[in-house]
Amino acid sequence: MRKSIYVLTAIVTLVISSCSKSDIQYDKDMERAEKMMRSNTDSALSILEAIDPSELKIDSLRAKYHFLMAYGHMCGNRSMIADSLITYAHDYYRGKDIVRDIRSGIASAWYRFWVGDTHGAMAMLDSLSGLPGVPDSIMIQTLRTRVLLGVSEYQGRQLIPLAKKLHDLETDTMRQIEAKYMLLTGYEYAGEPDSALYIIEELIDYARKNNWGDKHFQFEMERAQLLTEQGKNAESDALIGWIFQKAGHDNGAADYLHFQCAINALNSGDISRASLHLAVADSLAVKLRGDDDVYYRSYSNLLHAIIDFKQTGSVKLRHINGLNNRQSERFNRMKASQWESERGALQQQNRALALKAESEHKTVIILIIGIVAFLVVAGAFRIIIIRRQRERENEERIEALQKMVDEYKSAPASGGSGTTDSSALRSAMLKQLGIIKMVAETPTEQNREMLRKISSIDGKTNGELVDWENVYKIIDSLYSGFYGKLQCKYGDVLGRKEVQIIVLMVAGFSTKEISVITGQTTSTIYVRKSSIRKKLGVPEKEDIVRFLLN
Image (tube, rainbow, N blue to C red):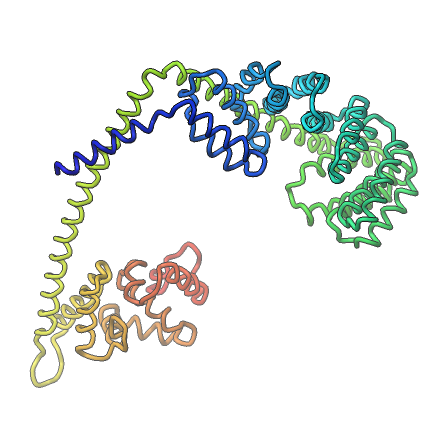
């Protein structure tokens, strides 16, 4: 016992000494996390999460920690609701370190986007993109973020110069294609379909030359939409027909293509054709997307309302309700984001309290470690006591089992007539069934071997724990010929293992006990029970044994 106390004291001392790291070690950990931030964001965040920010007493370390945490969340596309202290880091780096100034500013903009201040985020990115002397590699990150947010806000003319500048700065071909696609979006939102059509044709040519099947398909769909915007409905329909010819009528975007055809027909004044294409689009949307595509249904409801108005001269409330439901879903998502934001604010308040409680921090750690150590010691003693108690119970079970065996072997048989007194026979059978159940409850190897010996007294077990023929006789005698009736009615339907399971269930054995006696896993027993239920036609909510006994 004394040795255990000494060891426990040494462990507590070691843990307390390891609770505090030097500022140099914290700085090294954060440098290591920053180096792997782009290549392995999860590992970098794991390193940072192991740091307790309340231990950071130097402003530079605190700023570095909050910057890297927010930047890691941004790179990993994780929630930034709890990263409000990125503003502290950005203020610290402003005018000191151009790279971290820009990157912390980008992270701060993303934080504003996460909390719902998209316009504030774009304003911050606009100010960053105007800073002098920013390396192109850093400016590209700023512009990418700014253009993405502009697209999310359906900006047009504001987005065009930013997307052009991004395209000029990009050096990677794929990034250039992405920037050009953003520029295309800007032209669409600005209401300049001619310029957008010129860019989409460039993208189509590039996709065709480089065998980009999926991108080519996507760009052709964009071209069809732009033709509709220009009022060229027939050309749009012809292009959609060509897409169906190349990609098949069951392609993954068939619902949107038919939806586009419905718009073209509606613009051309052909209401019946518009209604037909919209019906096809709706059926395909259910097949391709089920009930998950809220985006499609919001557009579909609007088009239904327009077509119905054209046909009947009246507006149907169900379509208005459909549009309202889509808006309600968006509102609910905004509320959920707001709640998450509030929760993040509470977390930040807790962190601020933790920073003020630095002097009490180590005391709390020591107290927790002491409590944990006490619980570990108490748990160890409890485990020892439980094990000893189980050993005594096992010894008592073995003793009771041996007594049953002795009584079973010496069970008196009636004289000359060769028959046994029915009450004595029933008592012996109940005892034998009790022996089997006891072994199933405590399936030690010693108990198993004893059960095999008992079962082999009157017959052969063939390697199993019990002599099943003898068990079937016991069940017949104790339960009014149950086994014989079961075989007579369902013998050609049930398998051998299924029959064994049924008779043990009738005798009151649990699933775990049945698995021990039959040598199967409990999961296999559950599967076989389901099979029995189907074969016998037992209703889902009815007990199998009650069904058979009735």
